[in-house]
Image 1 (tube, rainbow, N blue to C red):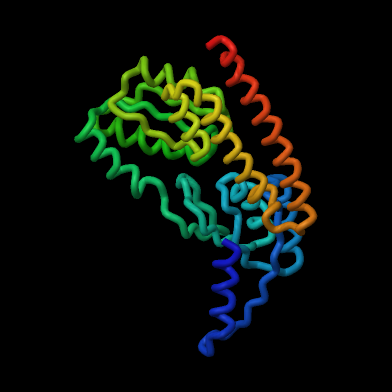
Image 2: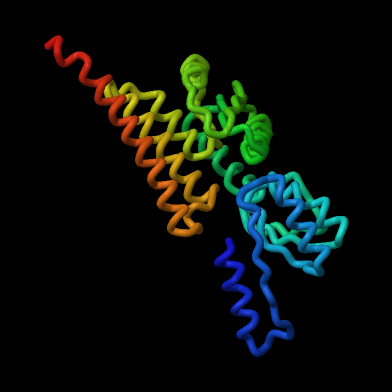
Amino acid sequence: MLNGALLGVSEVNSSKAARVTLEPEIVDPAGMLTRYAEITSALLVGGIRQIVGCYTSVSRKEVIPCLEKHDGLLWYPSHYEGFETANNVIYTGAAPNQHIVPLVDYLTAQYGNRALCVGSNYIWAWENNRILREAMTSRGGTVLAERYLPVGEKNLTQLVETIINARPSFVFSSLLLGTLLTVLAADQDFGIMNPVIALAIACTKAVIVILFFMHVKYQSNLIKMTVVSGFFTFIVLITMTLSDYISRAWGLW
């Protein structure tokens, strides 16, 4: 998002036809929801009126009151879940009804009219399932259940059992990728590899959080080395624990 905005600024500034010169001011809320409104207000009070950012829906909703108060304009470049209109926001992303409505036509024609919705407990999943529910109802279909999980939830046994018992024609999932992988892994029996696969998924999600959401990727080499050392120690401890667990039955053979 940042690189795209800076590229647009450079193209405008290098254009001979442009009547303005843009001066970007870069601020980073570091993924902390409470900082979005604070930073936005500071920018607007300082005279800035055009803001590009807020990748998530919840962060966008945090800054809208600030934009309305100071008459600023937010260029929102991410996916937009719909059901919101703000005079101070330009929504540039696709709305989910653009792909859910034709998807429902395909699913009902190919698989049946009994749906079960699962998603992360988040605005995007709520509104996606709302669109699917309305589309199914208008076509004479049924949504058997809607289940929402906290972001990062790892205990998915009950969700898998619900899906199996309900026997839907299809499952509409708006789970975040990490949780979706956990669901798929929980539905399979990999034998002795079950804990290894579960830990691999958990570690992958942890690495993504550390690198991007905690912004370690953009920190100094000292910070990176400290984080890598801690993560390496964690991997060593997990490896030793798994080695002990796996080798317990060796003496019985």
